[in-house]
Length: 206
Ligand code: TMP
Image (cartoon, rainbow, N blue to C red; front, side):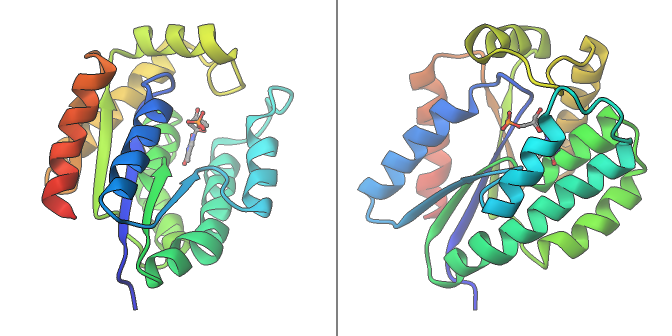
């Protein structure tokens, strides 16, 4: 029986998710919650192995459908091994990316049929839907420069700018489709301003 709170954080590469996730963790812990931090693709040994495979710059010949299924496979293991057990035991799970990333990147970015993305991921998530999702909204040009400057570029980040723009537009469309769950946060603001907006939403939900 699920009792915990499932929070996901989404956005294009370089949108500042990592910083905000750390601040969210501190905030939730200080309010007395047990918090589990995780990320996708990843979060379990098998899922991290799939992550290495997908993001390796050498693997340029992965087909869009294969890529989508690999992300979903990593997710299925993550849900099974980490997310479900943590939620069942009443913990707060903050996950850096979840199924919205597959709609934005594989569906809108790479053009995989959205119904196929939905069907495959329906199996992978096994009924788990985030209680709240923060979409860190920032111009993809700005975001990608920021990310490459700090950590270098992996295979996905080396994609052409029009790919990142399609991903960004995909997120914006999803935020309009699911306004109750997906909260759009202006990520061009200062770290403190972004964090206080997120905390307002978290206060409402916990
Ligand atoms: P990260 O750098 O935020 O950890 O994410 C790794 C990359 O994987 C990022 O470019 C987004 C991409 N990604 C997808 O394309 N589909 C997915 O379902 C997920 C979870 C990530």
